[in-house]
Image (cartoon, rainbow, N blue to C red; front, top):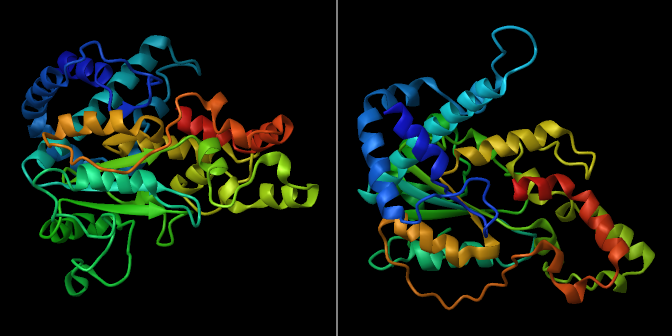
Length: 347
């Protein structure tokens, strides 16, 4: 069982990254992989319950952080064993979340990161296609899966309270599931109510989908952004200093609001954000969102609701919005400032 679980963990990818995934599937048929995953989940469910009570968000990277038996050097074999063990644990948790969603006992939460004033195209598309999937059209909040007239304020609250604290995540999920199968959270900065990592993302009753977009694509397509060469020197200084142009995704996923500081952002923020991404059930790339949603629908056993939303997709970071990049020097300056965010996206 352990060997089978390790194979599933290493061969099945849940990060749809426009062909840039670090892990490759050896079998393109998700149906067969999912059946195998269910078998592993059922066999291992007797100790998964124990894991959910003893392992917390701070345990991410546990295996990779343990000291070697002797000396400071860790052998490649030990590193591989720890990687397999960690991915095995997360894969089993994610398979259980998928299984629970399919039988109606897990809530889907979509997470998107956008610039101030920008339309949440990716989040809206996810809501329209997946949230309002065939048969679920009325089972999401009306306003892009976020709020709306069908949001029962008396029961669910008038104000946003996300991300939910770990201690009340299960209670809140149970309440929301009485109304919806999916909700969405959109962020323009570090969350007002605390870090995203405080929510119990690995609990069996939450299936999470986070949308990632190349930082340069997001910045250059923001409302009001002109061609880089059209800014005079003073305007360019102000543009670079804008908070939205300083590692926005990394700051949103960071463990505290002290992030970020351009290329000089402390490395522990990037490490923490990577660990948080491992907790999410799915990570979809806006550059190939249609492909990602098709895979998601296949896994979850739902039929996508055709949507009229049009997305600008980017498969090559070097070809982003060419009409906006008429000053290569300024483009490189903006890119250099967001190197940590780009590393997170590519990771």
